[in-house]
Image 1 (cartoon, rainbow, N blue to C red):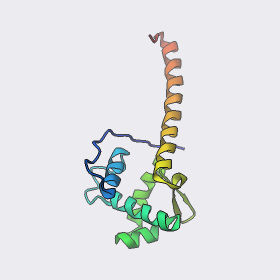
Image 2 (spheres, one colour; image 1 turned 135 degrees about the vertical axis):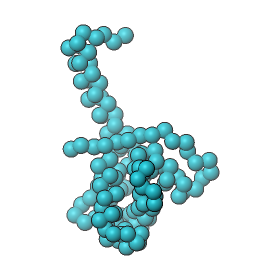
Image 3 (tube, rainbow, N blue to C red; image 1 turned 90 degrees about the horizontal axis):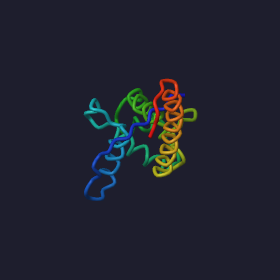
Image 4 (cartoon, rainbow, N blue to C red; image 1 turned 45 degrees about the vertical axis):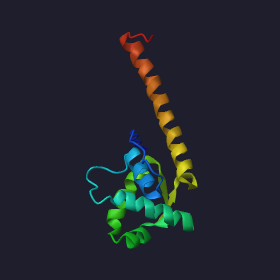
Length: 135
């Protein structure tokens, strides 16, 4: 399984506002790209969080209906969230990983640490193979 975790150091919003905080979270985790000029991803995540908060899960069709966009477009954006490990799908339902934003972020942190641990091991093997020494 390939997992893509992007972390950006983006300035946090100055004032507390849940909608700005969600956009900041999306920017910080690389969910929004320059091509998302309509800010669909932040709208999708806001709606997804609301649905999960109310029902525990959401569906592509519900999200598409509420946002007034095609289900295919919703699925396109959901793939990025799934690839990062922020959400997961079971059949036609979408769930937030570990059930909350904070827990999902903690899980992503652990995923990133495991990736860096594996990179460090390989880095050490490369250093040994080419004769480099670390300080």
